[in-house]
Amino acid sequence: MGTKSQIFNASLRLFAVHGYENVSVRQIADAVGIKAGSIYNHYATKEQILDSCYEFWMNNRHATRPNKEQYENIIKNGTKDDVLNIFNYIFPESIKENMAFCLLIVFSRIYSDPRAKKTYLDEISTATQFISDVFKYGMETGRFGEFNIQAISSILISSRNFLAQVSIINPTQLNYYEKIQSDIFSELIKLIPFKY
Image 1 (cartoon, rainbow, N blue to C red):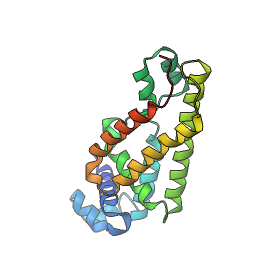
Image 2 (spheres, one colour; image 1 turned 60 degrees about the horizontal axis):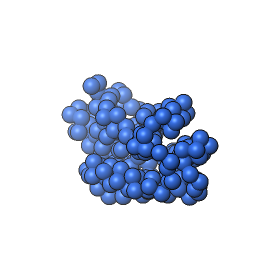
Image 3 (cartoon, one colour; image 1 turned 120 degrees about the horizontal axis):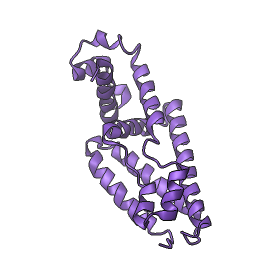
């Protein structure tokens, strides 16, 4: 792993656990095991590292989300469990921890940083649209019975966001919160009248 990646990874963890404002360049350098001045060979400012966090989230947030052709095929030919996994997608191991830290950073800054708020609102909008599109297709093909798409979509998004925000309290328990999220998602999905 290159020095820039080490700086990025260490910064994400520190920002998520301690808060962006509470982390110094020296602390980041100590976590990586380099001199503080070396960070400026890779990032002009601490804020540029934060910008990289937002970019990393935006570039990777749909890494495992099925595209339209894939989810249509799953709805038509998959099992009920396959359909549930459309909504409960997990990031690949290689980026999972960084994605979790990025999301925690975004949630912790939505009231103080317009970029974080924009990232958050964009995620809510695209996630809600994705879930609604999947539900509509399932109803159109007769694989789901009739239900209130907007209400269920809102519940699913709210539960995911609530757990992400709770994770800010103790970021070291990310695997525990991921398990809770999976369990809650599975229960909420039972509200959908599947015809499988």
